[in-house]
Amino acid sequence: MAFPKPPDTVVTISPRLLPPDEKCLANRIYCLEQASKELEEASIVLILWFIFLAVGLAVLLATLPTDIPTEYALFEVMSAQSTVGLSAGITGPEMPTAAKVVFLFNMWVGRLEIIPVLVLLRGAMVRTGLYR
Image (cartoon, rainbow, N blue to C red; front, side, top):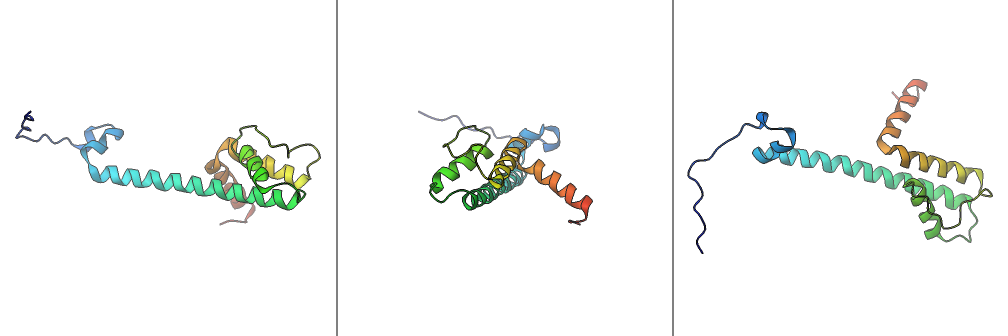
């Protein structure tokens, strides 16, 4: 089976004439720059998500009794931050206040997403003079 011969003429399309998502087809440099930028933004969100998770887990382990397994505490913090609503039975009205505040903050961050929360906190810190 013979494959058809490609055409001898090459049609070039200016990237300015294409919509933004089709520029990648006409300009490989733009495509690589865009992919790199999107990967960087996704990495920042992922790293921040894990930082909030680690802080929540550390506070929860410090405030709860020591007989609670670490994986249950991790599950609780992940569930709160992801706003899933599942529980391993650790949460309840008898929890220490610090643990309740951490859960509240993790649920708030999970609901609003990480970047808007950081922008809000930065604005509050600039107004109070804590950040320049």
